[in-house]
Every structure is written in structure tokens, then in C-alpha cells.
Length: 169
Image 1: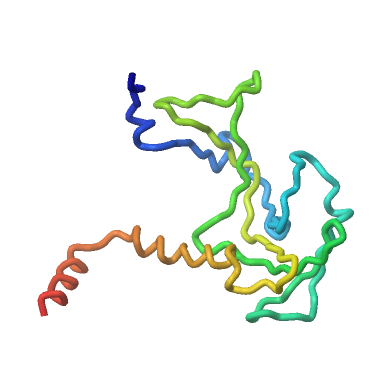
Image 2: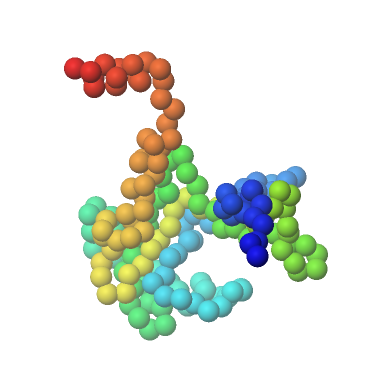
């Protein structure tokens, strides 16, 4: 017996993102306070991080960017701060829930509703054993933004005609 699949299930998972809380002031800005650590922290809640995690600037520069140093659980980390590209923003999202703790089920089969809790304009990422560089995975993912912009840019009829004329040469 085959399971019947709805159109929304066939199309994939969908979700709603609310980046500006309805009727509320803009979300708090965490610029300069977002860190990507090279480890897994199995804690989801408040912590007095500022007493224990104290990044500091060093005299080291890699590829024109000032390297920072910090210690986490006794291990030395090197990192640097990468700005979120112009036209983009970083958000900390939280899944919306009903009063009884159950996830909100949205209309038309959407699987989730997410609410922005914080916004940030840069991220500091850290390495254990290596100096940060433009070859690091996080830094490389920022190369996608101009590619994505170019792929999604509307093409005018004039540009199409020019490209067709160039191909017919």
C-alpha cells in the first residue's frame, strides 16, 4: 500500500521565518559577540560566558586580518572576525511554540515557524591548531553570496539579445 503524499510534502520542507517581531522593537544586535567554536557544547541555556571566554587581539595578521586568541576548556584557539557581506544579515532564530510547548503547525503543511531573536553583522570563528585563513570552510562559504546574486539577478531582454548576438558570431 502506497502512502499518499501531499503537494507540500512532494515539494520539500517549508517553513516561515519572522525576522522582525510583530509589533515589537527590532531584535537585539549581537554584532561582535557571535562566535563559532571548533567543538560541540552540549548545553542549551544561559551561561556566564564573559567570565570564562575572553578573546584578545594579537599582533599576528593573516591575509590582512588581525588574529585573535582565546582559550576554551584549556585549549588555545586562534580566530578572526568576518563581516557578514553587504546586503545580508545574520540572525539567531528560535522555533515558535504553542503555549503547551508543542511546535506551531503552520497553514498549508509548513513544518516550522521561526522567530528572530537576535541579529548580527559579523561572526568570529575559531580554529584549534591552525591559524585562520581564507581556505577555512566558513570563510569559503562567503564566496557563495556574489555567485548567488549573479545567478538570481534578473536578465533584461537587452542582455539576452546581446548574449545571443555574441553566440551567433
